[in-house]
Length: 607
Ligand code: F6R
Picture 1 (cartoon, protein in one colour):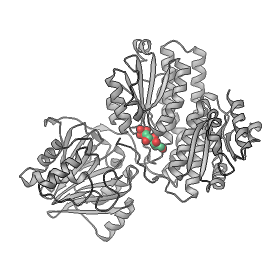
Picture 2 (cartoon, rainbow, N blue to C red):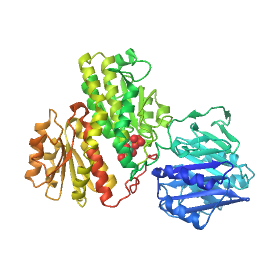
Picture 3 (cartoon, helix red, strand yellow):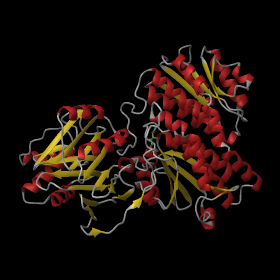
Picture 4 (tube, rainbow, N blue to C red):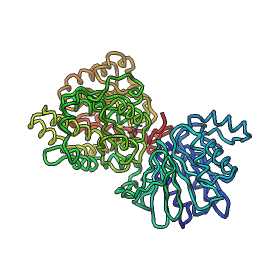
C-alpha cells in the first residue's frame, strides 16, 4: 500500500530511487513520483500510472540531485491522478507518505481557515502543509515534521525533504514499516528491505513513533519522546537474485516455480530427522497443557492457508481450532483468553486487519505466535514468537509460494503441539513428517503438468464465470484457486466446499459455468465424485484437478489439470499448484499484467 524510498549520498539520487521503486512497485502502481534537492531548489516529477510512465517523464525532463525521495502509490484519499500523486509539495517541502491521516478532514478545515490553499484531495498534503507552516514559523525540517506528527492521528510512514536543508531527509514511522539501509557514504530508505537490495545488507527497522534523519554521513534516530536511540543495523540475508525475475516472464511464474525449493527451505528450518523443532526450545510443556483452543487469524490467501492449517491442528494436535478472518475477529466478541493460542498468519506482517486482530488477541491475554515471511515486520514485533516462512521475497502481488510455506508452518505447529500434548502416536508423527518431507518432490511433479495446464487455460480463457469445489483439506485449495482467478484474470469465480453446492450454487451451473473440482485420492473421493456427477448432469463443464491414473474421476472430466499422487496430508500443497498455473495462464492469455493486478496492493496496510 504505497512504497516509499529515499537516498542521501554522493551519487545522483534519481537512478538509485528508480531502482528502489522498481522493487516496491508491487505495493502500488496508480501513480509515481520523486523529489530531489538541486542547487537550492526542491524539484518534483510525478506521473499517473505505472513507474514506466515516470521513467519516460524523467527521460523528457531529467532531474539530478544527491538527496531524493520517491513514491509509488496505491490510492486511498483521492483518486489516482496527477494532483494526488506523491511527492506532495508545499513551498520547498516535498513529502511522500504511506498510511492514512485519520483526522485529515479536521486538519484540512483548520488549515483552510488559516489561509492554506490545497492543490490535491490527499491527506498527505495536509502533512506537507503542517511541515511547511511550522518551517515558515522558524522550525527546522525535523522540528517541522515533529510538529506535524503531534497534530496527526493514524498510522504513517513518511519521508520529507526541503531545499532549505538540502542534504537531509527526515523520515518517520508509526504502525507502518520503514527501513533505513546503511551503505558506504550513503543512506537509503525503503518501505521494505527489498528496496535496498543490491546497495546494502545492513538495515535498521524504524520502531513506532521514531523519527530519523538521513544524510550521506549516516542516520540518527529519535524515539517518540525525542531521545536519541542507539540501535545497530541488522544483517539482511535476502539477495538481489532472489528478488529478480530470473528469466521468467513474470515474478508470479518464477515464484510458482520456486515452490519446491522454498518448501524444502521452510521444512528444513523446522525438521530435524523425524522430529519437529520449531525453535531451539521445544514448546513449553506448561503452555501445551494450558492451551485448550487455537485461533488462527489471517486475511485473503493467508486465511486460505489457515483453513488447511485448522484441519491439521484439529486432527494432529486434537485441539479445537478456528480459522478466523482477522477483520471479523477484531470486532467480534470471541471467546478467547489465556488458554487460547493465537496464530496470526501474514506474508507481509503488515496487513492492518491482521495486526489489529493480533493486538486485540494479545489484549485478551492469548499467547501470540506470528507465522510471517518478513522478519522484523510489525506483526513479528507484536508476537511472542515468530515462525518464519523462509520463502524469500515475494514480489508478485498475488501470493503463491508464501501460501504453501505458511501451510507448511501450520502443519508443523500442529505436529509440535500434538507432540507436546502427548496426543500424537510416534508412528503417526513419523508418517506425517515423512509426508511433509515429500512436499518438494510432489511440487516438482505438479509443475511437470505446466504445458498441459497452459493448454487447458487457453481453452477456458474466455469464460466469465467459474465454480471451484473441494472437500476437507482442499476446501481452502478451492477457495484459493477461485481467488487467484479473480485477482489475476478479473473473472468471476466462486470457491465452495463441494458438499455445499447443492444448497444453492448448483443453480448457477450451466454450460457457460466451468466447474473446477479438486479431486485428490483421499477418503472423500467418492463423495466428491458424486458432486462432480451432479454438476455434469446440469451441463457443467468439469475441469478436474486429479491424478491422470485415477481413471474413474478422469472419465467424468472434460479437462484435467494433472495432480501427482501424494499422501492425502499434503494434497493441499500439490493441488494448489495446478490452480495457480491455471489462473496465471488464463490471465496471461487475456494479456493482463499478472504481477500487478488492478486495484490490488501487496500489503494492505489500511483497514
Ligand atoms: C492474494 C493475496 C492477498 C493476501 C492478503 C493478506 O493473492 O496476496 O489475499 O493474502 O492481503 O496478506 P498478508 O499475508 O501479507 O497478511
